[in-house]
Image 1 (cartoon, one colour):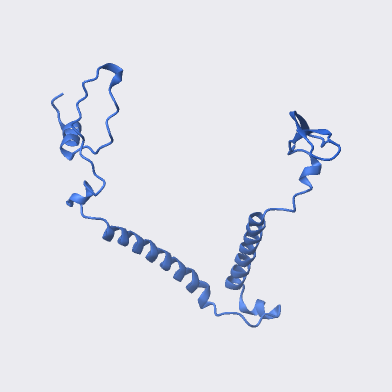
Image 2 (cartoon, helix red, strand yellow):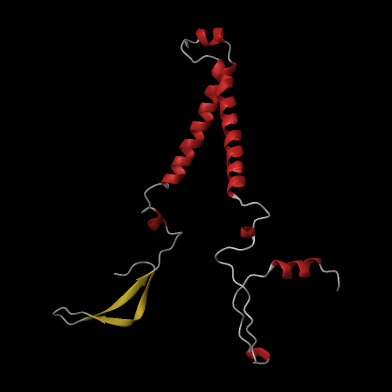
Length: 167
């Protein structure tokens, strides 16, 4: 019996059974629109589930936070809620979070400035991987010339090319 989406191969495989019969090899192709093959999947991907649960949790936590921050205390007492954090934390936690983010960004920028060499340093132009252009003059003509090896251009050549007005 063959699968619904299979193709017979032109080659035959010899069976080494005692009967000595030959069988044909078949290659099956999975159809993504086939309902039978989609039922093999075992539900949604974990990342989809985590994303959905995370988004719902975020919305619920935001609603609870805003209700705690803005509903007056007598209303909370009337519905039976007597234990909750001080209202001070409704402003303190977001303020602390924003200050921590600003300080982290400032620290990151400062760390980058500290690890960067000054503009007058020669290490901004040369390092251990710098190569001088070779003075390889080929005597070959036309299309026979080889490609020159990769090298760095000197700052004097770049200045002449960019700022020389004698064109």
